[in-house]
Image (cartoon, rainbow, N blue to C red; front, top):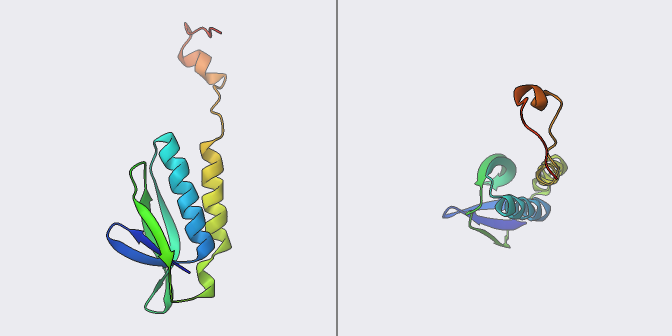
Length: 109
């Protein structure tokens, strides 16, 4: 378990979720984008969801947590964050429709 320090508050999250959040925050910062994510957190001994806004200037850090809950390392959340990271690195390609919208545009190499 980790204490994710964010916006002056502390969220109790799973270690793997914390790692994925940090990886996604770094990936977003590198491309200058922001995103809103949803992660499982521990609140008064129960698992709940929390929204986190990540962006190029997000300041977060983690410390060890004394509380534990197995449900916090949610594989679906981790998979979603990893997919979001991968989508930031996919090339954007122009489709055939673009030539209709911009008939005078010519590619120069």
